[in-house]
Length: 331
Ligand code: TYM
Image (cartoon, rainbow, N blue to C red; front, side):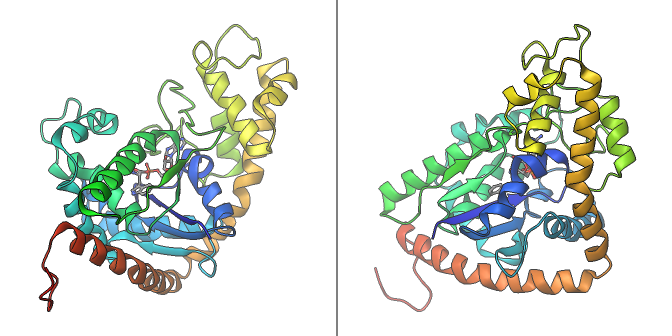
């Protein structure tokens, strides 16, 4: 059975980009692959954060993942910091990566641009992400388009480590969806949808009500030429709406384009489709968040399952790279 791993940062309510770009696929993969999913709280330390808020969001993000369809009986759901091997393997991979390749990461460049003080962890972030993946011998990593470069680096690090120190890691593949791999902000369609605090009207979260979804879709920025055509360069706002409708109804982009001559009806159908898809997620979220102790217990179980796999891989990597194993005289 193939192994799958993916992760999400606890940076606020899960949004439509997270859901369509990644998490919906996770919920399908769990039935066909041995799947590990984590809330990457250590990655949440790479930018300014509030300790209490981070803790709360970590739990809320786990609740969001369960609400979006992850079944802890079928997959392994855990919090990254509960499995100490992530931080430990990260160091070995920092010592495998070079300063030059980490400097080329576009996400680092974007996030550090114009900032006076940038945490060192933001720079080494991709090594930690590579550790998340390589610890589980993942064959496949379902992510949105924005993670492609990090996945390429992960592959490079795995290959380099294997060739220097002997076969240690499985070299993973990114699994990026055909549509909605890069969901754009509804108000600023030139940038990707992200945390709702940055653009409340441009971001649809999994907890938005039917009315909020309808309002945000109605107000979504399009263009004035009025022609229904898929042209992400010249008509990014409309192209985003077309992709969202395709992704949320299972139709192709061409089918969606062929079905409309005006923007209004397309927006109306999109609001309906999104509200229909997200209503059960929101309902499950409300139910689950009433019992945080059960969610915490289930995360503890997930961490125990994850640790069993992670500790074996870490040992293999430590041995390969030349660390003297405790209690061993092996050379
Ligand atoms: P994060 O937390 O930003 O996002 C979680 C997942 O959602 C996808 N995504 C999107 N997809 C389409 N359109 C968007 N607008 C959009 N925004 C987010 C992301 O591609 C991602 O798949 N570095 C990762 C977290 C991570 C990870 C890992 C992922 C840490 N370790 C190991 C995979 C494997 C991140 O910041 O994702």
